[in-house]
Structures are given as structure tokens and as C-alpha cells.
Amino acid sequence: MRCTRIALYDIKSGSFDEIAAQARTGMVPLFQKSDGFVSYGVAQVDKEAFVSLSTWETHAQADAAAAKAADWVKANSRDRFALRKNYVGDLAIDIGSAKPVALAH
Image 1: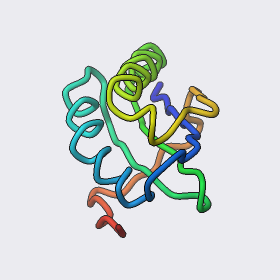
Image 2: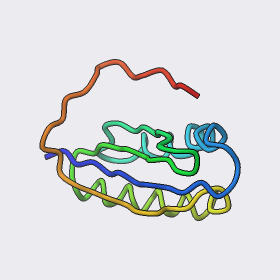
Image 3: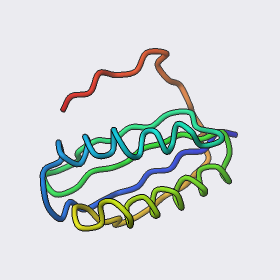
Image 4: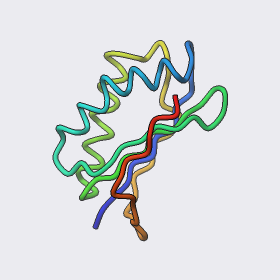
């Protein structure tokens, strides 16, 4: 069963656009090279917070992604944003688009 990881982050400094650009060049390739990767997205939920949404083939792969993300944030971005909460869960409904959404930022 596919699994999703949802991580809520607090923005500590800089703008969401800067953070999204950093995720695009750092986190995207890291996740794309990971076993079980299905999809990844980032969305600003308010002025001071954003979420990272990723989908994986298994719960274990989603858990591994959470560890990889934590290591990447620690090494690259802990002064810009910090993890508030991480959620991993099995998908009950998983309907997606075959075409990626254009980046808004």
C-alpha cells in the first residue's frame, strides 16, 4: 500500500520562495533517487509555515524519507526553517494527475 509523508515546517528566516528554490535543488534530487519515490510537493500554508508532501510505495520508504529529510535540513537549512511535526500514514485514496503542476513560485 502506498504511503504519504506530510511534514509541517516553520519558516525561521527568508521567504517561502527562497525555501522552495532550495528544496527544488536539494530535496527534489534526494527524494527522486530514493527507493519507492512516487511524488513530492511543497506548499505554503501561511506566512510563517509550509508543508512538504511526498508519496512512497511503502511505509518503510516513507519513514526512510523522513530520516533523509531530517538529515538534509540539519545540514542545509536549519537556520531557515525547522520541522514542527512529521506525519506518515497509509493512503486510503490515491488518485493523481499524470502531469505535474507548474510551480507557482
